[in-house]
Image 1 (tube, one colour):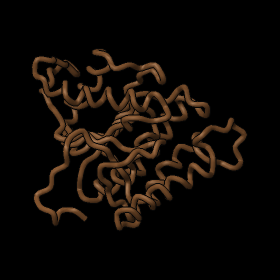
Image 2 (cartoon, helix red, strand yellow):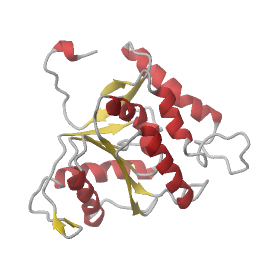
Image 3 (tube, one colour):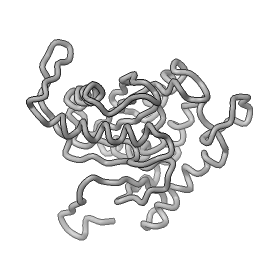
Image 4 (spheres, one colour):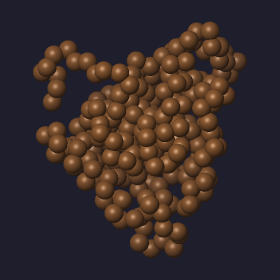
Length: 238
């Protein structure tokens, strides 16, 4: 199956938090989108790998993505080496996306920056035909995505561009709340973490509103890039 966009996240819920609005919008425009989670989030303070598997599947249905896979790398301990790069390369060649979305280049959780660099490196290597990969007994064809964009997570990194997600914020929050074990629940007796507060949940909307305010939109999500952006004409800018 060829996809237009493939979004990677170090943990289940990274993609929802960082770029669910953009995914929802692109799907509404007829694009095909898939998600690949690197780990099962088994080191999370709340919940368990099994619970998060179910939550990730529920979130995928809300978003309407074509496929969601989990590479089951070790939460907290995966590294950017040949073994892990090859696993990413297999996914890229399997789905042949034009655009890859991945973790923030710098963030509070160490897995985010690691995942960001791992996916970015694998996107380049995936285009080298002398790197051979085999899936289900068939040799894969080399494939390099045209574009790699990094969504913004905990830290307020300055975006290189924003996507107008006006009209998609409610569904975005719905996909995030599919992870009931991870976010604000006033009745929960689980340990408190930085992402379980009511403030954090509310921040998801006011960050989108602020990015929108700065760009003349109602709501927006921000991304950083690996190369200069190009437009056909000045009129392409909102």
